[in-house]
Each structure stands twice: as structure tokens, then as C-alpha cells.
Image 1 (cartoon, rainbow, N blue to C red):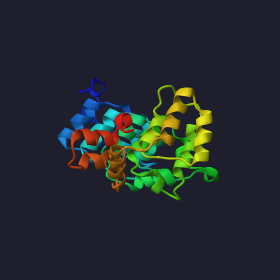
Image 2: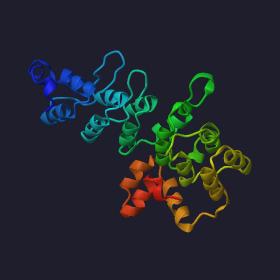
Image 3: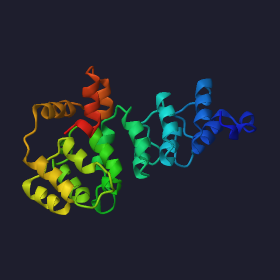
Image 4: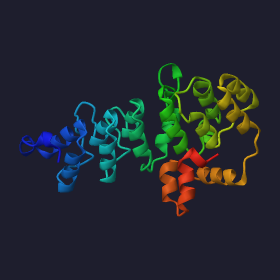
Length: 253
């Protein structure tokens, strides 16, 4: 158990212990509290905003605590008093590993739909505020990006992200095409002109090549899901290699 609570633990009620443990990212203390069965993981720990333990872990980026809470039954879709779910807070604060933990286990598709369609000031898409690393996770978890909204979501993502310098090693461009997204010729030409030589070759290859039967079959499986792909693929009675291909773009191109 984390030593920091050695003297205080006996004097704090379980709810305050839970708040203190998750606020500091103390996984051993959190595990001990859960094992004793004295805490309600979905209770509001912060009165002003209504955050639960999972909200706090995701806001602060404690992905280990988030994993422990989710595995113990914490509600990943519960909103706080502002309507923010733990996933929303993880996205807003660019906590990519917390986003991955939630998408890996959450059964809710509406959260993904809301993420892609939510807007902020001047009707700008909220996802445009997210980091490229977060966008990779969202693309991998979304069954069919073009099916959301008016069918032009892929072009908007292209305009906002793919024609700008990306962090070194960021797989956003590859993930965009590997999850079945395609662009009109005009958009593809504009994209190619903005890329480095290696990325330009990748974009050109994707625009001119005919998808293989295996690639088309993988896309068909992804697009048949009505929940996020991370969760859906793990629920399917399919071979391990196929399951991994659906949730990781490494071999999905």
C-alpha cells in the first residue's frame, strides 16, 4: 500500500480515502479500498462538479487508476454536473492513455458520435482541439467515419490535420487511410502537395491502389459494428490475429 496514507488512513472515511487516493494516483491504495468493498466507485467525490473517481483519474492522466476503476465496475459513461463523461475529460486534457483505457472497455457508441459532432465557439468542431495522438485513437475506435454527419467528416479531418506538419512518428496519416477513409481527387491532390516525400508516396499509393480482398473484408467487419471498435472487436468470436488487426493499424493497410 502507498505509504503516504499510513497515519491518515484510519482517521479518514472511505469516501475521503477514495478521493485522496485517486487524486494522487495511488494505485495500491485504490486497489486496497476496492478490495475492502467500502466505497461506491460511482459516487460524486467533488461536490461542485460532480466528478467521480474515474472523472478525476482521467482528468489528471492517471491511466493506471483509470484501468483499476474500470475493471472494478466504474461507470465510464456517467456524466458529471456539466455533462462531461470521463472520456470527455480525458480528451479535453489530451490524456491519450486514459482515452485508450476507456475506449478499450466502453460499450457506448453514442460517446463517439457526440465526439465527432460536438461543437464549440463559432460552430467549430470540438475534435479540432484534440492532439494528433488522440485523433489516431478516435479513428481506430470509430467503425465508419464517413457514416457520421453529412458524409464529409473525412474531408474535414483531412483539411484540419493532414495538411499540417505532424509530430515525428505520429501515425495519423497512415491510420486515416488504414481505417478505410478516402478523399476526392481534388482533396487528395491538395494533401499530396503539403506532405513530405515519404508521406506523399503513401498518399499517392493509397489513392491509386485497388484495395485487396483482405483489406475490404476487414473494413466490412469494422463497419458492421455499432459500438466503438476497440470494445466490439474484443467481443467477437474471431481469431486473435483478426481481432488485433481491427484495433491496430500496424497491419491494416
